Length: 286
Image (cartoon, rainbow, N blue to C red; front, side, top):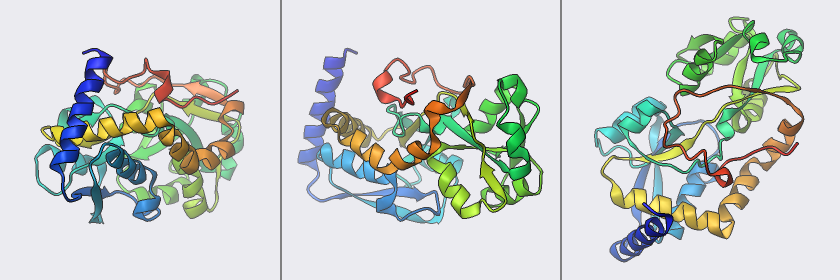
């Protein structure tokens, strides 16, 4: 489908949505983190602004309980009615469960990884020059996280944990050497859980990774509205401004342009990922 035809269809869908929705639509989203309240959450704010830009007024309502990412996608896939939108890192398997809107909402930030490690391991890790050097260390990851498969596919030793809250204690106890965390996560986690841990200087990992909004497989109306709204926010520059408002301080603190970047491949990335559109992805300035 040509870009012009796609834009025409999206605009038509947006007009239909605007006329069809007299009252705000209630959208159920997962409570996936203990972090800041809903309207300080970047993905929630971006979703709200995108749907407003598409002419679909909504109210976002998080679930009372935390829902793991895989279970949230399963809820979408089986039309349980418990969720309407989920945002999470994509993979081939996940795109078979639910419908992705293929615009990376974090501009690939979840593929830029800094290493959280005990102080006594940090000095050795900062001297790592190559991926082969890194294979001498063990990496901590979550049981069902796509990143686990990415690290393993690159020959890294991975220690898997089923409990996020326990992972920082496991790291302090020496059960793994480092915990690769995204630029978007690592500073908050270090401030909250990082006693005895440090963010390793001078080095970082990078692999292509996209976090998308997902909806139920047959929710054409909502999928069209989200895509249309994101395109409109990107065109006006509102998306970039929101991105920098929420992530600019973390990126400045990370100094990615001055770090040694270890590139990893991501075999879990679907072929339809828009890697050929550089305007959708963050790249550090050297």
